Length: 114
Image (cartoon, helix red, strand yellow):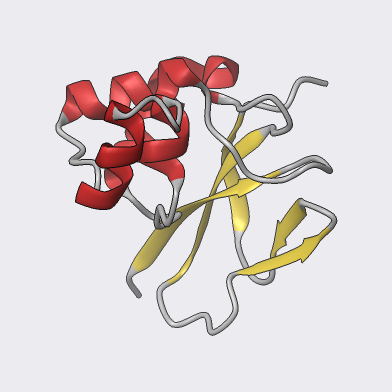
């Protein structure tokens, strides 16, 4: 069965990525959406805002950046983890005040510190 990797946040506060993670994603080839890039170029948004707004949690550039940067990929209020599930799972993420868990997956990489 096919597997799907995606990113969740393991703490209260909400999903977010660091400026370093956003920069790494762009270096890897991630293309910022045109409207988001406009806000970034006008100085209204940070690079991490422009990259992460409407970002799919299974984005391969996001996953690669987290693997490469570890906890340096975390946003100010996040501890990111990569979860793997069977591709046919209906609801991947359950959220409570920003803290997220996967319904049927298991964590294969985490930036949360013990």
